[in-house]
Amino acid sequence: MKRSRGPHRKSAVSWGGDVSYGYVALAAVLLICVIALPLAVALVGGATHYGEVFSDRELGKVAFNTAAFAFASVSLEMCLGLLFAIVLHQTFLLRGIVRAIALIPWALPTAVMAMSWKWIFNDSYGVANDLAIRLSLVGHGIAWLGRPGAAFAAIVLADVWKTTPFVTIILLAGLQSIPRDLYDAMSIDGAGPLQRFRLVTLPLLRPSIALALTFRLIQAIGIFDLVRVMTGGGPADSTKTVALYIYDVLISYGMPEYGAALTGVVALATFLVAATFGALARGRARA
Image (cartoon, rainbow, N blue to C red):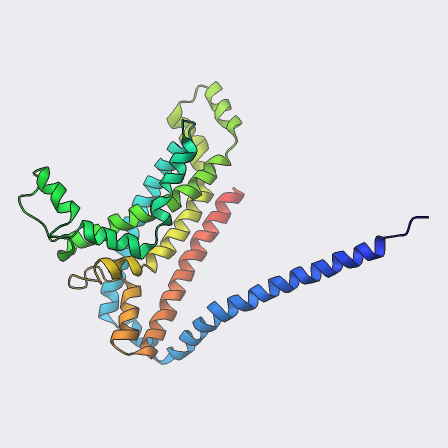
């Protein structure tokens, strides 16, 4: 006579489910302690200084720098990321190795990468000056990181080199999720490569584009380590970002209350950006 195992199995499943919920609850508590509580402290601690935030002229300047950096770097990364994703989506010899090599810039620590770019743009022994002189583009060395426009272009270039692979990964995953049958049907109907891209690839890739755009905008708004290592915000604060300004307020100026108010405002702005593009991604996905 076989012994019934139903109740025992049900109890085991129930116990396993309780443990799973416990792990989820523990993760939620950790997130609250690490993210929510510090943010709440910042919001409450700087409550009396929010009026100063919106009248801070220096904040307006660094906010403009941050917006310009985000626009320039993210725009280039989205265009290059889409191009590289399309190339890496094709079938060719050693495709797996090429994909792995393409991820190297993203895998490098930002501080190490920023120091390398700082050496490249050094006005005395940098590779950029040496190459420009050899190609007769300039007659003498240029202080790349000592000129506002050149320094801004340098940090944008470094950021594009660093994070374009991240965008490429997201868009490549989106390309791989598009059914091949759609392309075959369009080819039978006589559609060319540009028509297939416009009518099939781009519409179905919009959720991935919105996702990559969301992540990159959030990261660009909070850019700190790259600028800190390469230029320190100079020259003449031409590359100082909001995150670097908050750091100066907290550490250099010794104003923790005002720094808390700045942190709260920037966190709210970042949340609004994430919510906006997250809603866009969900809307495109349903469509």
